[in-house]
Image (cartoon, rainbow, N blue to C red):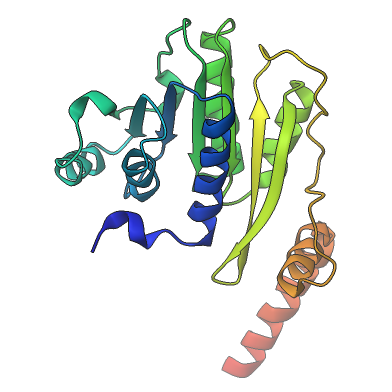
Length: 222
């Protein structure tokens, strides 16, 4: 099976955003960080959406497996790097689009904080799709004055994922700041409403519910 055909709604939403961006003001370099199976990056390569696609993952065996998958593609169009994304080096002569998906919000904060600190004068823009703890990411982006260009909410396998396209601190223009919560809700979408209720539930209520569940489980055992 062609790997690019396996994209689910989450990765398809990111791909559609990348396609739109590359039709407007293209980024020469796109970085697929935490690339895992590489399906998104492979689709970007197949669609010829950038001059160079860089696959990045900390796991060396993942990069090795990707090398075999990428055999049909020109080596001049892609690069494989086994490293922590926070340690990457960016050419200051070009604009860069970094995709971070399938990583928790706290880990994203660590990565982009390192990138921005190491490359204060390079234009690095980001597509984020945190797998968890999106609040940590939003708080960091808001505090550091990242500009929010676009956000959306995509549902897959009964889970909802926030997608944010943000411009880094070197960007110019009067962009709105990242808010502390997603504002792209659909009132008639039950998945969206379920997710909204979930992230807005008070922390003490969740703990209380967990204690009640444990008491019920204990009662059943006894």
